[in-house]
Every structure is written in structure tokens, then in C-alpha cells.
Amino acid sequence: MNIPGLDYNTQRRTLLMPEYGREIHKMIDHAVSLDDRGERLRCAKTIVRLMETKVPQIRENAGYQQTLWDHLYLMSDGRLDIDWPYDVSQAEHIHAKPQPMPRPVANNGLRHYGRLVQELWEQLKVMPAGPERDALTRHTANQMKRDLVLWGHGSYDDEKVADDLARFTDGKIQLDLQHFSFERFVPTEEMVNTGKKGKKKK
Image (cartoon, rainbow, N blue to C red):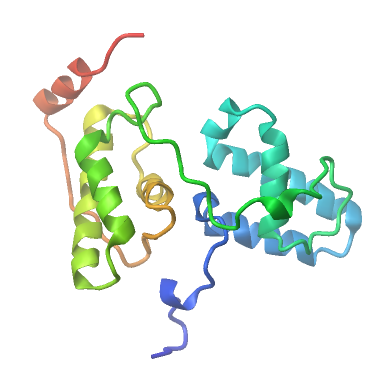
């Protein structure tokens, strides 16, 4: 059913690299549409900087700037006509599907989600769309939000939860924040202190 004015995830195009999010893909489409070649390049450089913030762990890889520009080329379907600062001639050899993200471990900044949430991500990856997956998605998203609030991670807004959920389910689960409502969760001082005690000093 197609209702004018309503935009459902099922009606949107499939993201080539969902770890970067839909907004990055929209920015790339905008860059492609620009008439001025120099302006397209300036826009492309800004997009690459934003891409790096979406997957900051990519900085751990040697030559990560090359990888970012390769990904930009792929997401633009080769339509972005600019003076590429890196050689992207081999970008087509990269698989179109997003590369699996590194498994969260104790020292990579994702300790706050814990093994339970990691297991929920794995379940969501293989579940068919339907009411059961919707219910598990709701439970997982709310648990992630509680974990972030409890651990005082600094950033626990809804957008971060949606981005992390999409990233660690390989793009299978994309929350529509215009229609999704999180459960209200107000941590007590005792709960917050318990979370802080669990953090290891560096």
C-alpha cells in the first residue's frame, strides 16, 4: 500500500553500505547533482570527513583514507565526476556488501552493551521480517538505550542507538525514529554508581 506523504523503510532504496547511514547516501546524491566540478570535490571531501566519524574504528587500518574514498566511489555508483585525490580504479573489486564490523571486545569502546545485546544483534541478522522481529528489535533498542544511560557513555541519544543497531546488524535493522518510541528510563543514583564501578581505569 502506497500512502502519499508517508515514507516507509520498505519503500526506500537499499543502502549499498548501511554502516554509513542513509544521510551520507543522500549527501552523495547531492554531490553528484552539482554542476560545478570544484564544488563537487569540496562536497566530496566534506562527505569523507563525515564518513570517518560514522566508522571511527576505520582509522585503525593502514591506508584508511584510501578505503574511505573507495567507499565513496562505490556509493556514488561511479557517477561522481571529480578529480579523485586517491586512485579508485580498484574500488570495484571491493564487495558491494558492507564488510563485517569487528566483533565488540572489552577494549574497543563497546563494553557497555555487553554479551546479551551482542547475541540479540546476531539473532536480528537472521530473523525474517515480521511481528517477532519487530518485537525483538523494540526490546533490543530499549536495552541498548538503557545500557548507554546506565554507563554514562556521554552520548545516548536516539540517533546513536539507531546508528549502532544498524551497524551491528549489518544494516538489517534500521529504526524509523519518526515512528519508533523508546521506553522511558530514568536511572537511579545507585544504578549509575554500579555502572561506574564496572568501568576499568585506564
